[in-house]
Length: 225
Length: 410
Picture (spheres, rainbow over the protein chains, first blue to last red):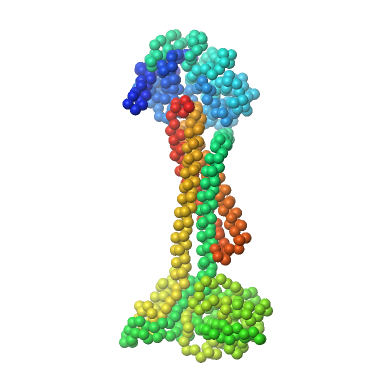
C-alpha cells in the first residue's frame, strides 16, 4: 500500500468568471521510503501539488489517500491534525518564527500535538542533536546562517516522526556548499527510512534523486523510476 | 512553555506597535477611569444628599391639622381641624404600623437668657421619642429629654449647637441654668453639629427643646402645632397615611378622602425621589462611560486587526505545523483580553488614586466623598471583559480563517 495515492486528482481555481485548472487528472503512487523529486517550469502546478500533498489545500475532484486515509475530504481541523502528525514541511525560505529561539521553533509542532512538557524537552534536544545544532538551542534564527536555519527547519519537520517529508526548493535560498550539506541530510534521512517528496529547480539535484516526476501545465508528463 | 511563548509573542507585538498599543491601552484606561469616577462621584453625591436630608429625620412623617374641603355627615366644609396632645398616642395605639409618635408644640420666638447673654430663638417641645425621630443627638456627656422629664414636667432643656454657641461661647453648658422667657431651665444636653438640608420649622441648630408637658404647664396651649410619626418600615408610609386619615377622620368627623383636612409630609417619599433621581443619573453617567469604553474598544479592535495583518505569515507557519484554527483564535482573544485587563487595572488604580486624593480639596461639603463600591468595580470589570472579548474576537476569527497557503505566501 503506497503512502501517497492520488487518483484523477484535479484542482481548479476560480477567480470571478475565470477558472484556472492548476492540476488536471493527476495519478501518483508514492511508496514508503521513496525519495521523489517534483520538477517542472513555474506555473506547471508544482506548488499546488505540494500544497495538496501537504494537506494545506484540498483537491477539487479526485481522491487523495495519505497513509490509508482519504484526506482529500477532511475538514480544516482534521487537516491540521494530519499536517501535525504525518507531514514535515521544509520551505525554501525556512519559515522559522523570528522572535522564538531555535529550541522554541522546533518545539512548536510538539506543542500542537499535545506532547507533555518533559517528553517535549527530551525530543527537542534530540532533534537539535540530530541536525548538529544542539549548542544553538538558545539562539534566534536571525543569528544563524542560511544553512543552519534550514537544518533547524528540518529538525522541526521531523519533530512528530511524520509519514512524509515535504521539501519545497529547500536549497533555493542557499549557497552551493550549504545547499549540498542540506541535500546530504535528506539523503541520510532517506537511508534511515524516510519518505521524501522534494520540489526542485536544480537539475543537478534532481538527477541524483531516484524518482523524478515532471509536471507541465498541470499534468504529469513524465514519471521516471 | 506555551505560556512563555504566548508572552513572548505578546511582548513582541507590543514592541512592534508601541504607539498604537500605548494609545489603545490609554483608551481603555480613560474609559475605565471615566466610568468608575462618574459612578463613584455620583454615589458620593447621593450619600451626601441623603445624609443632609436625614438631618431632619429618617423616613418620618409630619402631620398638620388643616381645614376640611368636603362636607361630611352633616358638617359643612371649611371646618378647622385641631390636634390635641393625646392624638399621637391614640394614633399609635390604633395603628400598629406606627413605631413612634410625638406631639410637637412650637414657640416661635422665645427669649433665652444665660447670665448676661440673650438669644431670641425657637422653643420646640415633644416627647422622648421626638429626639430619636428627629435625629437630635446629644454631644457626649449630655442627653435628650427623657420620660422622667416628661412625667414630672421637669424644666430641662436640650439646646441646639448654635444656641449653645450664642449663649455659652466655648463654655460647658451641661447643668447650667438658662432662662426661657424668665423661667429657669437646666441644660441637660447640647445637640451635635449635624447637616440638615430640609426642615418644616427652621434649622434644629438654633432651637431649644423641652418636654411637651413642661411646655403646656408654662404656655397655655390647647392644640398641637403638629404631630411627628415614624412608621415601623419606610415602605409602610403610604399605608400609615391612609390609616391616619381613617382614624382621625372618625375622631374629628371628616371625610377620610378629604385631602385638606390634615396635611402630611411623608419624608420617605423624598428618599424615593432621590433614589429615582440618582438612579437616573447613574444610568446617564453609565451610558456616557460605556460610550467612552466603546471608543477604547474600537481602538483595541483596530490594533488587533493590524496585528492579524502583520502576523498572517506567522499564523500560516503555525497552521502548516498543525495549529488548529481554534488555537490561533484563542491566542489572539487572550492577547486582546490582556491589553484590556492591563488598561482596566491601570484605570481602576488611577480612579482609586483620584478618589483617595480628592478629600484634600475640601469639596466634600458640596459633592460628598466619592466612593468606589464593589458594585462599581464589578460593573467596570464586567464591561471591560465583554469589550475586550468582542473587540478581540472578530479580528481573531479572521486570523483563524486565513487560508494557510495564502498566509505562507506572504
